[in-house]
Image 1 (cartoon, rainbow, N blue to C red):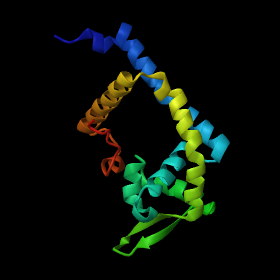
Image 2: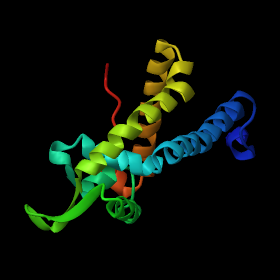
Image 3: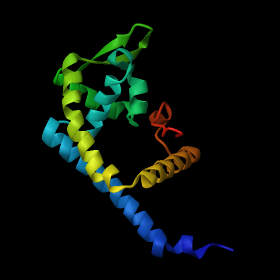
Length: 172
């Protein structure tokens, strides 16, 4: 027998849960972008690119690997890298280990820009998300996120670039 609840739509607690999550998925990126645009002149996506490079060995990553970290297509990443290059915050170079690949390389100016943007970003993340949750709720949220990501991955619904390497919550 067909489950009519799934055919007719979400109701009650399921609808409230889904609508709340969908709203967070819309509002949180906009809030993170607004803070970073105001204080650092960059988007949250661009900050993520700088952050990944800042924590990569030698401040460099292949563009394909960086796209995985950024959960992005190479096309979207390339546009962001072009904007960051114009500011002198990173540069591209052929990968000496594989001439078919391109490296994104963080410059000293880019490292400084990311370093300056970090305190405001961290404060915003704490203010909007982490400080509103108890320690137990943060652990629950980490597990919830892990399960949702696992489901997306199992369904094959993730962008191909995101399968290269994505954020993994620690097992603690």
